[in-house]
Length: 126
Length: 111
View 1: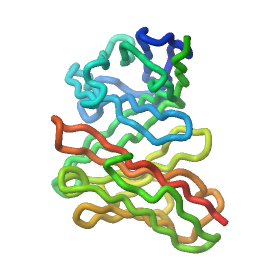
View 2: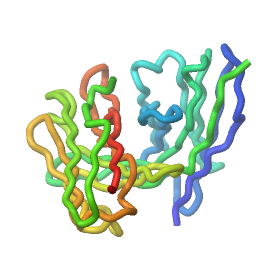
View 3: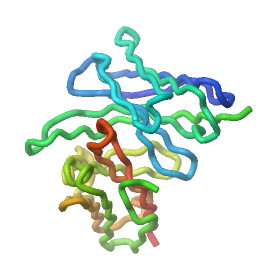
View 4: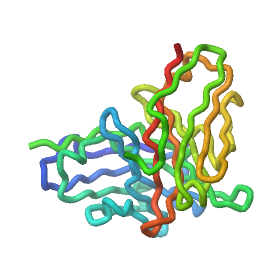
C-alpha cells in the first residue's frame, strides 16, 4: 500500500533553516491525479497547511508562510521536500507530509488528503 | 483563531448521535467542497469524509457529512468509545491566490 515517511533533523536552531524530506513508497509520485503536501501541527493545537507541489513542479504555498517556504520534488528518488527558512520557536511542530487525491465529484474538484505520513517532530531551540 | 470555526469540544454517550459544525464564509466553504479528518490521540489525521458527504472506503456509515451555504457538519451516529478523537474540517479558501484552511478542531469525548 501507499506509504509516506518524513525524515529530517528533529532540532533546529532559531534563525536557521528547517529541511524535511518525504519519501513515497507503494505508488508513483508522478501520477497526475495526485499532489503532495506538507501540513504541521504545534503540540496541542490544530492543523496548518504549509503548501503543495505537483510532480510537474507546480506549487502553491500558505500565503502567511510563503516568504519562508520552498518545496521541491525529486521524481527519481520518489521524494518531495520542504524548506522553511528563518525559523523561530513558533515553527516548533509535528510536520506531516500527505498525498492529495484530486478528482471531480458532482462537477466540483475535490482534493482530500487520503494518505498521511506518521509525522516528524521538529523543535526550534538554541 | 481559525477562519473555519468549530466548537472546541463535543461529547456524547455510547449509542448517541453527535454533530460537529464547521462555519466559514463565501470564499471558502461557500465556494468549495469540505473534507473532514479524524485524529486519534498520538496519531496522524485520517480522512473521514471528502467532498462534503462522501465516505472513503473503510469508513463506517455511522459517519456522515453535509454542507449548506457557508457551513458544514459532521454527524456521528451510534457513538462508540473508539470515536473519541479530534475532528477537523478543511476546505480551500479562494482569497490570497488560494490556500487550504483547517478548522480549529473539535475534541469529541465519549462519556
